[in-house]
Image (tube, rainbow, N blue to C red; front, side, top):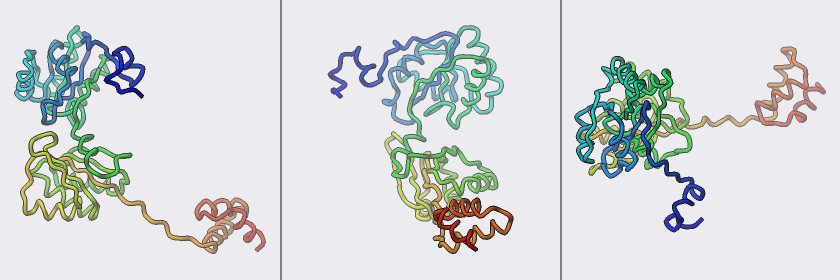
Length: 300
């Protein structure tokens, strides 16, 4: 493929899948806009354009969003939308959108609706038939996973654990046999207790503790749960954390012999199964050939 910088603009879409939709803001729509998780340079031109051209913005914390708008020289009406008022404000926002206004949904940092009250607003829009568009942006979950050094092919996002001790431990117990890499969010004041509970529930697995992503003190600590408990017992944690933990190991299957396969087949025959079917099922369970098992048990 040619260098994309040498391609004429009209060939970009055909060659590498790029497109230019001119960023037209439609009326009667919700735009889910990802905001920086630390570094303001990560805010895309399309995101700036969207916030500058919608009719109003639904913000998790209007003070935080106002700072973002001021940095980019934007002026736009804000409506507060967060965990404790989402039930009341969701209908207000949807009513305004259905009256013909356009709205951008933003969180304090990262992708709205991911472990975020915006999830409910998107669901309300879907129920009402309101078009929802996404303006992609930074997300701590995917960024931390990418730099964790652990398996990324399959993973599960578990979000924040409960502050309640029993609920937190119940959650961890539910996923202790999960074989995919797991991603959690955690606050610094809860980190040590969470690590201790993880060590007790999961055993001493590998973990990447990723904090302050894209900020001045960004850090990736790749270690084990046991070592992490020791470290943060002596060094009080600072900053918001993403915890990336390796999944449970596959249990090694015991080596089975031909005698084991024959015993399985004989037990099935004793329960009334035909020799042919018993040999087939014993073969599936042990890996030995059906014909080999059938030849012996059928002759008995």
